[in-house]
Structure formats: structure tokens, C-alpha cells
Image (cartoon, rainbow, N blue to C red; front, side, top):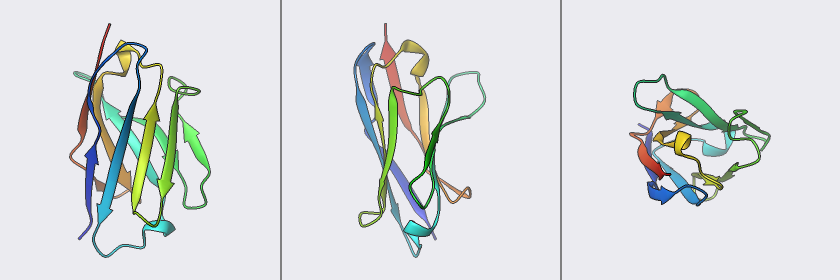
Length: 113
């Protein structure tokens, strides 16, 4: 069984920064699979924010490119999302995903304007 636990969300003013973490546990080959951060704003569908492959290549949604950075620490079985220059439209519940199968329960990010 794989468990993913997100942390680091909170309330921040526009222009500020937050760093999200997602720690994985369970019998997994963490380094062998891709990881992603997704978000879901109220009344909207869940959308991809950023993804990092097992080899470290990354891709981002156009709306966050240049502001957010995804990274991973395979030894700690953790994926991070550094979010800078936050905007009110970044307000959402952020979820991490492992191997396109497993999901965390999410962490709320609220950006006040």
C-alpha cells in the first residue's frame, strides 16, 4: 500500500512563496516512477501543475511556468513544489500523484490579493 502525504499549504499574500512537500511511504520503488503535482480550484476540474519523470525531466502547465519548480529527493521519497510569485488564481487544493495511480489527500493553498 502506498501512502502520499502532502504538507506546506497555507495562506499567503499575492507575490509570496510556499513550498509544498509530498512524502511517500509503503513498499514502493520511488525512484522508478514519475511524480506530479495537480490542483483543483473550487468549481473547476483537477489540472496538472507540474510533473517530474524518474530521470528528472520536468514539464509544467503554462500558467505556472517560470514561477513554480518541481523537484524530487529519492532518498527521502519526497517530491517538492516550490511556488513563487503566487497569484490569487493559484488558490486551490494541491495534490501529489505517484506513478499516475496513487494520490494524496491534498493540501490547501490560499493566495490573498
